[in-house]
Length: 282
Image (cartoon, rainbow, N blue to C red; front, side, top):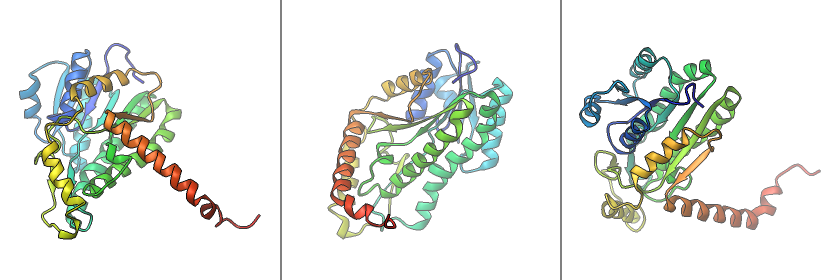
């Protein structure tokens, strides 16, 4: 998946904090080179210091000119990109009815359209190399949705659908695509700088999305997942000769996937006769 077995060039979005910063740190520790992007690249320099192996770059994933400039800077400096990590994104908590259209459009601009913009800008270079790996950060919420996180989960469902298609389109070109599905990891994701709550609340949802609001506050910074171990796992994954389409991370994600798969199997069995009854008669 790389043009150089000893040193990969990473392009990481949202690299100034959280999982993006941990992946940056782990990749540098592995001896790789990192193009670390953020809206304010000064924060990257402050966190990691100056290094020939690190290029902090300004990037707003919602601005295609900014995306093009960041990718151009990466290629000008290092000549290639081996691993693209689409990590930039944020969450929103609130019932679907509580979430106004402007908030929905805003999160899609970052979590979905931003990911697409960066991927489209990097792909010509990966195709030219006939090598590379795209790691798209989804979530346990990209596999199973639930009350309070419906809009956020819908963006991650979109990421998973896009990634599945990319996997089929790019495999013949020697380019891998892996969906990363973290559960609850102990980062600042549930803090106000990474997740927003809808301003409106509707009392009828107090026992569903309302409970999720409360739980998010109590869980924040107490999550069971270790982001350092997650980052090391992702760096190891980048060296795999056969990376998976999906990589769930965290015991909570594994449990959620198993639970949903069992539910889908039970429901399909119960409704199978109805499901197949709509074909033209043979």
